[in-house]
Image (cartoon, rainbow, N blue to C red; front, side, top):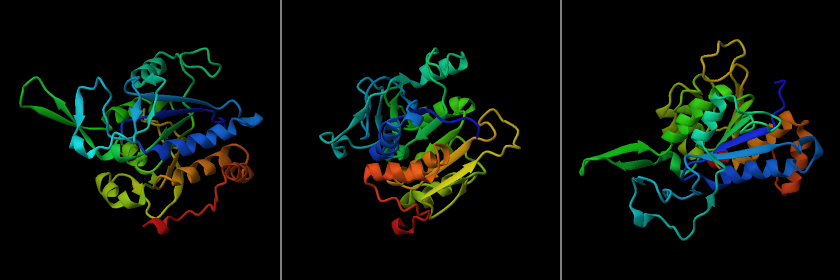
Amino acid sequence: MALRPLHYHLPLFPGFQLLDVAAPLDILNIRTQYPDTSAITLTISAETLDPVSVKPIPPPKAKWRFDLPVSNINTACNQQMLPQCTFADVISALKAGKVADDGSGEFKPIDVLIIPGGPGTRLDRIYDTDTTFNEAKVSNTQEVRDFLTAVAPYVRHSIITVCTGSHVLSQTRLLDGLQVTTNSARYDDIAKQTGGVNWQRNKRWLRDSVSKDAVSDGLLLPGIEIWSSAGITAGIDVMLEFISAHYGGIAVGVETAKRMEYRWEREKEASYFL
């Protein structure tokens, strides 16, 4: 694509996998140390401005609880990330045209969406209703799915999914007809749930794109790239491939991998993990 991707956006939800997020972001952090990619920016969003936990722990003011026994959650070992803005803030700014590459808007444009996976992708929330004995069960990722659907028409370059982040995105129907992979251990369950996607087994990462001949349906623009990876550590591989493709070739990926002291073998199969 003609556009050089520089502005990254990461939406979070409770129960995200930490390495799904940390690995791709650390690669971007390393690239910001080089003059040709020093302009990379990152925006992190969530439903609220509360810290988002890697464990299935609701924010303090949440009016819901997870459909899990509280005693099963180890809160003594829990990391959190702090969002910079809410989903509603981003959607409002995009619809109002208050985004700009030069920073004069409320936000930078969304060149690349990074969607993590994690245990939170397969959990439900329980909302108490006005009636004492009535409860409503909603997917934990419903809010982030609504966000992805709302911002999809504004994505200018690519979407990168890590692990079961592809399952989250597939539930929006944005991946229908595209070749996509996901966490190896979760593959069968996910493939059964979203049959419109051309799921590919035994792939460490995949790259596909929305056909340039496609008529925009208001969801994703023609030409948008879709990068997906298998589970957790595969997020390192897909991001190294992505920066190689768009920031100067394989030498850029190799250079970054060496900085990380990561043995990047570029294998495209994930059979070892099946």
